[in-house]
Length: 425
Image (cartoon, rainbow, N blue to C red; front, side, top):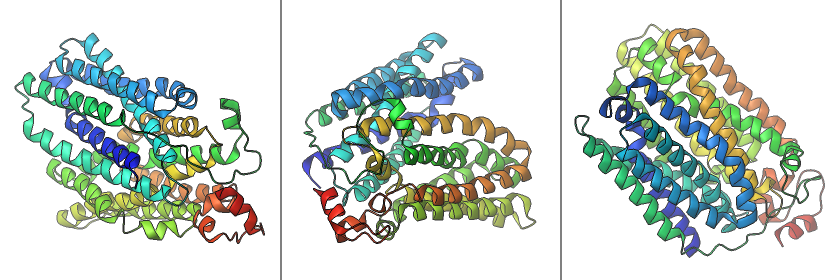
C-alpha cells in the first residue's frame, strides 16, 4: 500500500467517523432539540437524498474533466460548512439549507474517493483496497456513533452544536490530509466489445454491462441498505416485538460481522467470479429474510425470536462483506480509460435513489403487512441472484474474474493469453 492509498484510507475513516457523530441523532436534533417538529425533521432527511441526486450527475463530469482530488476538496469544504451551519441553525429554512450543503458534499465524496482508489490501485490490488475502505467506513461510523451517543444531551442544544463542530473539523482535517495526496493514473483491464472512449451519459447507457450492473445495484441497495433503519426495524418492533435496545444490538451485530468477516472472505471472493459472488449474496440474503420471517411470524419464544432477528442483521453483514471487494472494483473495470469518475458517480446515483425509495416502500409494509413484506423482499433477494447470473454473461473473462489476469490464462471464450498480457500493459 503506497503513501497515497494510506492517506485515502485515513480520509475514509475520518469522514465516516465524523458522519457517525451526527447521522444517528439528526432526527432528534431537528424535531426535539430545535423544536422544529417531525415534519421538518422528515424534510431534512429528504433533502439529504434530493441534494445527492442533484449533485451526483454533475460530480461525475467534474471528476472526468478536473480529476477526483479537486472535486473531493470542494465536496469536503462544502460538507464542513453544511455541518457547522447545521449545528448553529435554529430555523427551518437554515436547517434545510445546511442539510442540502452537507448532503451534497457527503454524496460527492463517495465517487471522488472511489475514483482515487481506482487510480492508486491495480487490477490485482483493487478488491483488497475497496475491502479496506468498507472496513474503515464501518469502523469509523461505529466508533463515531458510540462516542457521539455519550456526548449528546437532548436537553442541551450546545451538546449537538459540539457534535456538528467535531464533524466539520473532521472534514477540514480530511481536506488537509487529502491535499497532500498525489494520485497516479492506474491502468485498466481490457474493455468489453463496444466499450469506447467519450464522456457522455449516452455512451454510459450504451454499455449493456454497466446498465445491468446499475439495475442490479438498485435492487441490492433497495433490498438491504434501504430497509435497515426503516422497514426491517419497523417489522422488528411491530411483528417481532423486540425492544429498542435489542434493535441496537442487531445493528451492532451487523457492524461486528462486517469487521470480523471482511478480510476472512476476501481471499474467497478474489478467487471466484464476481457474478457468482453477487449471486451468492442474493441467496444469503434470502436466508436472512426467511430467518426474519421466523422471528416475526413463527411461534417460538421471545428469546428465540429476538436471537433470530439479530441473526438477520448479521447475515446481511456477511453479504455486505462479500460485496465490498466486488461491486466497486467491477464498476471501475467496466469504465473506459479516464471515465472511472463518471461511472462511479452513476453507480452512487443509483445507490442514493434506492436508499430514497427503499424506506418509503419498506417502512409502511414492514410496520403493517408483515407476511407480504417478508415474502416480497425474499423474492427481491432471489432476484439479485438471477440478475447477477445474467450480468455475468455481459462481462469479459477478466472483468468477471480478475485473478485470471495474474495467471495470464483466459479459460472461457478461448481468448489467447496474449490478450490478457496486453490488458495488463
